[in-house]
Image (tube, rainbow, N blue to C red; front, side, top):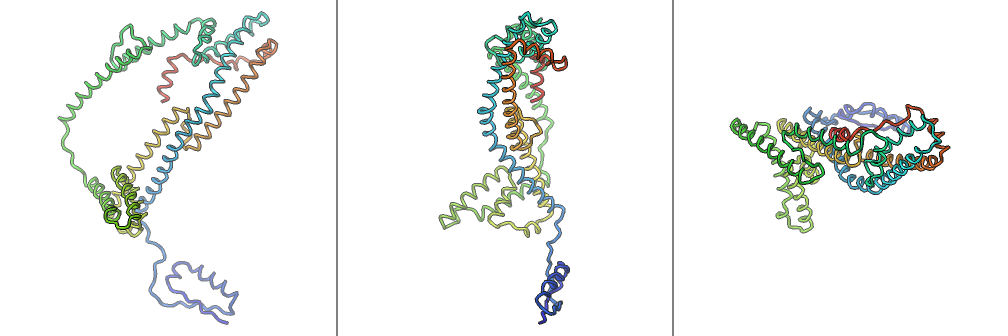
Length: 402
């Protein structure tokens, strides 16, 4: 039995290998397969090659959708991350701090034991200084301060006084104000006066700059590009309002749906959110690929500029939100996603549990003088912790890190 397999030029243009493959498959069931080319009107099988502006539009819309999804993820993760810190990190940190203070007291008692050699005492002296500096940050009982002062040449009170004097000089130089000799860092009223003086100077400077700027400024007219952008987004919004206005709908169920869509359109237009407006057009089948193909190049370029600005704004929102979260939960900057933040938090919990277990073992071992001596003898000089930096250095580190 013979089979005539007919095809036209348009199919040939699409893929001649496809035709041959079809003939091979059909030949298994028929004795003879004859390929017949029939003359028909050619049909374009491939879409028209998009212009550079259309390609840019597609790239921007896809990128903007990804950025919006990422921002939404960070916003949803924000509260859960805080919850995890409160429920997991803070309780563990408090337990570890309590154990460190207990360790400091144990080491202090051991130091006065005559069974220790001079070298062992030198090593232990350094460890006590380290633990005392560490415990000063959280201990409010005064135990850490009292031990610190016995093992250091300068007391905590003297360090704080020198730090405050240095910090005060820095503030006076930076803001050009005189705080006076009796300025109290612990007083809210004193700081309020200081901020008032700084704001007064800034307002005076700002007022002078505004006057100068006003004299120099001339009325700025909108550029052609800005006019096209404004008209383009307005046109998209008007097209939506024509279809979505609820007052023009008689069916009550559809009226509710259109009211919700119209509300989304109003919010998007107020924010100049072009992507959401275009997505709404897609949703109601008001915008198709042919609309994009038919757009004038100037209008498409205007769309691209608006989408580019919108994407930049979303990225800035993500960066600010991530910066705040990073500062609150001590998140390293290389974690770019909420999943990475949760991974870091879980890793911190594991590390803190390990530290807690190690401290517990050390407390048990150091309570025994023989174990402590063996540990001190085994400890090399390079493994002895370095004394922490002073308070002023820490303040400046925090400022630059933030």
